[in-house]
Image 1 (tube, rainbow, N blue to C red):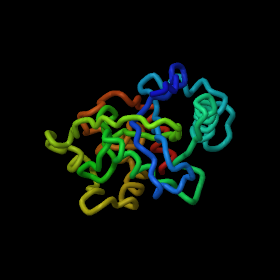
Image 2 (spheres, rainbow, N blue to C red):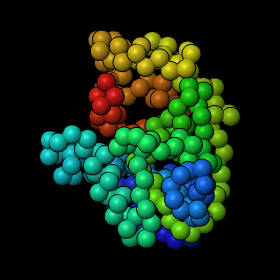
Image 3 (cartoon, one colour):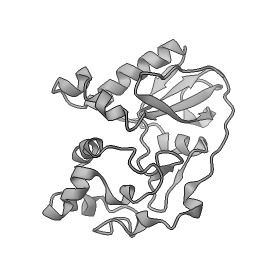
Image 4 (cartoon, rainbow, N blue to C red):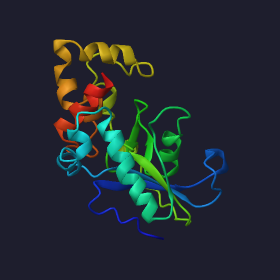
Length: 207
C-alpha cells in the first residue's frame, strides 16, 4: 500500500474504500482515500495560509483544492471534492464504506476518531487496492447525548434546518454560533479535537 505522505499538509486520512462502478468516476479499480483536517493542529496552520488571509470567498475550499490537488499529483491519482456544485459526489456513502464512519443517532456522520465533527475536505483516487480494516462503531456503547443536546430539538424528526438557523440568529443561539453545534459537541468521541474558533468559522458559513 502506497503512502500519501500527508505530513505537514494539515490533513489526515479519515478512511478509505474500494472504488465501485456506481461511483461514476471513470476508474474501475483502485481506492478512494478520504481526507480531513488534522485537528486540533489544523486550525492554527490554516489561519496562516494565503486563502484564509486574502479576503476572498470560500477560503477553506480553495485551500483544500490547492493542497489535495498537489497530494493527488504526487500519488499519480485524482482528486475529488464534496463542494463546487453539481453533480455532488457521494461522500456520505464513501465514508460509510470505509468502515470508520456511520450514521449517528441524529443522522450526521460519526467517525471513530473525530466523532460528530467528522469533516471531509476531499478524496484521492489511487490505482492500488488498499485493504479495508473496519473500526468499532462508537454509538453501539453510547447513551446518545447528541439526541437531546439541541436546545431547539432540531433533530426530533430528521433535521429541521430552519429551526437550527433561526436559533443561531437569537441571543440564545450565541453558544452554538461561537462554539459549535451543541449536538455535535455532546458526542464523547473526539471531544476537544475541534477548536472553538474553527467551529465558529463553520457555523458562520452555515448560517
